[in-house]
Length: 143
Image 1 (cartoon, rainbow, N blue to C red):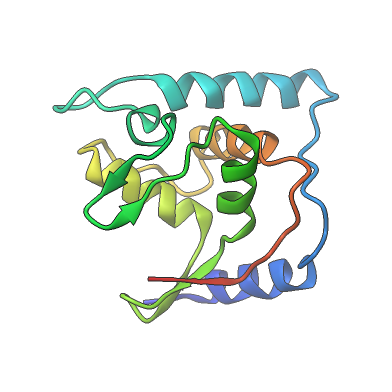
Image 2: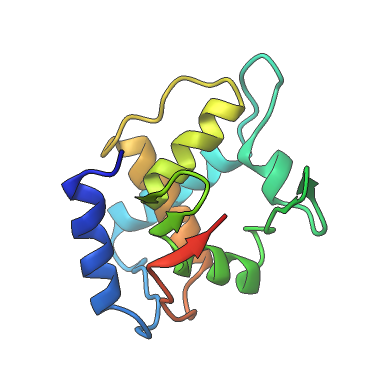
């Protein structure tokens, strides 16, 4: 079920609708977070030897009927990043980007991505920097 955190996140992001995504990379720690996130994105692990890149670093990938964005390219990264948090129709709840990433980890049979952990921050930083220049278009609706 949705919590107050999802509601608060949706409210804050709604106030940012139309704002240009600009995840900074000036400070050494910001750059280090991006580099760790990039390493995580391409790191293969788990019983199926998957990485985020297995599904999200190639054009035209799909799982069942779901198109998978190539998050290494600017336009698909912008569209994906800009539309979270989102109301998931299939679940009847608003979900955050972090929830989406944890669901990917679950599908890869990896341990849970701990909410607010350095790993989650790093991966979101990597995705956010790749989406720089896009316009926030969230909260959105996803199936």
